[in-house]
Length: 351
Image 1 (cartoon, rainbow, N blue to C red):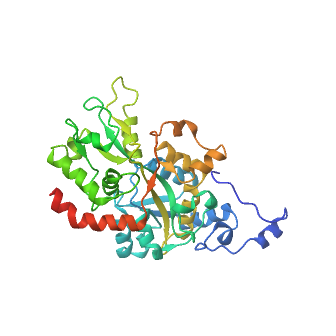
Image 2 (cartoon, rainbow, N blue to C red):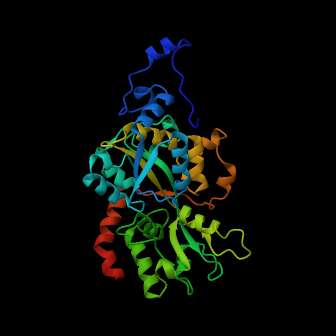
Image 3 (cartoon, rainbow, N blue to C red):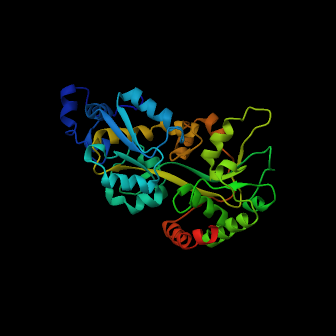
């Protein structure tokens, strides 16, 4: 079995059973609600399926992760709107029927914090390995994986950039992965470009992209030779041609604009499959699946702990884009202030 069984009590089956709590699929921990992983698995199998939302199969290796979960536990996974944004996930959960509601959300941290009252607290077995600054200390939400804003580029068409300012030079056709008022990756792309001495300022980011547009360097993704996006997106694209004599894509994380961010996991209070939701969480934070995120070029939340315990997939880690400089993680007030500014000014400036 993928996850180790928690053993409780003495060797006598009768004594062990007496010491185990009654099964409570809505409990806040494995020990409190199930006692052992076997009992959690049994409860989840009785529910039969798991409802997820907003996770494309190609995103951070989620296809392999979902297939592994179904194969290991025999549960059917139903994914609603794979491409849904974090806010869209919440909006769908508000309006869908009880039986079709998402069991677990995959969200940007700002959306998770704003909607914490919608989540059921649950602390996975590996709770202590998740850094405190990327989790709700009561267990309503916690980071699963993350990465850095990066510049992906076609080395056959443009020289390797070392900073965002390089993108203002002739020849670069630069795109964001969507509208920064709608898409988290595009918003963070603007904020990465805004960094100066480690400080974000939305006005600087808007001024950068305004200069880019006025100089003819702002492009649609379909026509771009350069894409500002998460490193795991650009790295996955680069891996497709990495062995070619002339690779078609490379990725760099500017040392003077190292912006980090995480996606977090949260269980829906209205989860129609509460045991399956908790099994999914335990599964995602296991050593094996954290390394599966790593194989999808994302940085697992438990990465430092895995490395210290000798459990990190070194080969996968070696394929990640290099990071230098001091990483910046936007605070919620910083993100809120930036979004307010961009809502008021982006469309007027960029057209």
